[in-house]
Length: 274
Image 1 (tube, rainbow, N blue to C red):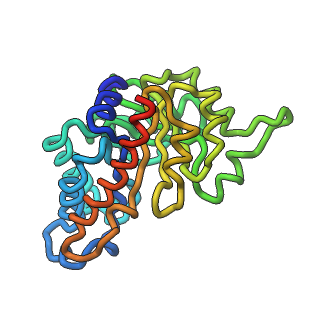
Image 2 (cartoon, rainbow, N blue to C red; image 1 turned 180 degrees about the horizontal axis):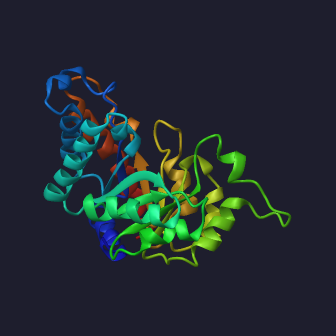
């Protein structure tokens, strides 16, 4: 998916919501456990219920890898289902890969050729040659970890050099030598608040994938105040607050209501920007 196609979807749907498919076999409604593929059955119901309100889906690979082969099959079926039934959706593999060049080449092949997702999250710690293999695919995106929402982000990401520049700012500056805003995004946690101003100073045009809205306590209004651009520039993810809002047999209907609530908030914000 190109940048312009993504922007067009945001404008058309009046939404920049990404639904995180963090599907845990231990948390899905009990009645689904009798299904042949419970994880896929849950994902399919969530996708059907929320697709009209979202522009993206983000399966977190850990939840599927934890189930071995069955998990990978469920993941592949989920991606195929979205591709076939909701082709306008931007699919993000939240894999946080990043390794030496030849290994990254195989990771890129996995996600972009075999699975045909639109984007993959990548860790920048090993530098340019660990990231560039993901950049060799037209219409595909790298979403580089920049400033995350977890407590441990203080350990490295905010450490400063002798000139007072935090490490996350170095990542933003250096990585823009590898790819432009048409192929690279950044992960910035919703709980980082006013730090979005610093990020926009360095990366004014790149899309930001923003996890942490909802269950993690991030503020949508604050994220938009400091992080939104004339093209929106944001993909805001919500996982648990939507997909686990209800554990009964009406879980999908409840997920739809939660997604709609978030989309309606986004629509009001978009009116003043796009």
